[in-house]
Length: 271
Image (cartoon, rainbow, N blue to C red; front, side, top):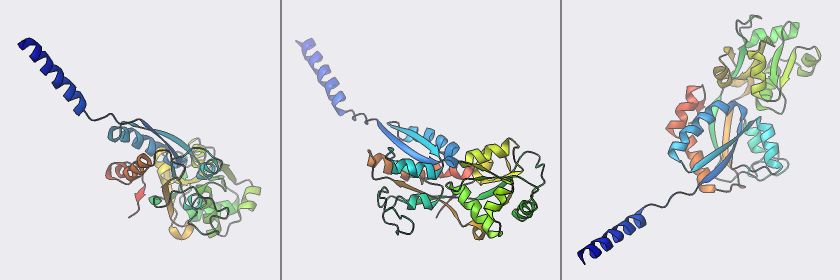
């Protein structure tokens, strides 16, 4: 009888212990669309985040912000969007004026948008700097002379749009320069970076963080007067499938662990 009672007690204790265990968190998949310039840092942050939220699988799609915006507009599933410029985010944000969102697109989940990071627009050169470029002032003069080849982003790419502002600052005509054969283009910042790394151009205009990741030498950095601030906005989209998880990830990106990774490659947090 004692054995039976002891067995029943053991069974009850086991069942109680099982019943008291916390339920296992459901597996969640988040799709994050992010500017190509975030490739290395977000990949690293994603690995760190799995320790904080082991039930969350992050699926990244890196490309130019313009391409990502078009994919979102055309119905691609995206939970969190991080753009390399406000322009592409504004075009998806119904709260913005018609002058910046002419199509009245409504994809940003209101109340989630933040200015996440700031970057710098850098003038980078290949190893050894064969053309001897040392500044934006010198670049402008050399472009007018037709003595160098500059790599820049396409007009639908934020880094290309910042470059266009720099050319305008110096009173340079992009179309005339392109016709003269002193410009070459990339469909995103990584393509421009590759052209510089391979020595296919005299220099290129990219982000400081991409120059850091590629081990390139930066000879000058554009001022706000030349091209404005380089702001990276981030937001949860209203097409999100797992809103709570998406909000948590966006909060994590603003926290100390993610910030340390961002700042380690040259991004600045926006206070």
